[in-house]
Image 1 (tube, rainbow, N blue to C red):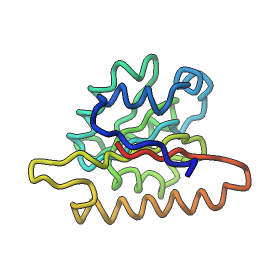
Image 2 (image 1 turned 135 degrees about the vertical axis):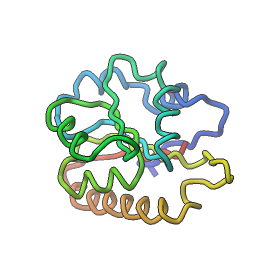
Image 3 (image 1 turned 90 degrees about the vertical axis):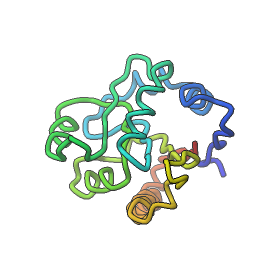
Length: 165
């Protein structure tokens, strides 16, 4: 139970919701120095939704670097190079691209403290993230990978907070 944060009841904007679930963000952001990792990982159903969330979180993110983790107009090699060269605090993207980066050891989840699933948002066809078959498969695979990682790392008292927005 302690790993799951309260879901967004849609009374919050994305920025205010993040401020509520992560009140010590400034401290986490300053202490994060690892390359190839992010403190907060946000999974969305599409690249367009990822861009929308990036724009809407300006009040929350402060002085941090955000990495776009989706395939639309961004090659995976570019993202791998960016992860190797710089320190990023927030990663926002699709389950398919995140899965590919994790499988290639380009994205490490060891320092990820928050995983936020854009669960309540619906596209033009009123489908949520889990209603789109191709996204659902990659999303479930990603959750399985994280769950397996949690089982391996629990002995080191590593914790990830999951949230459904």
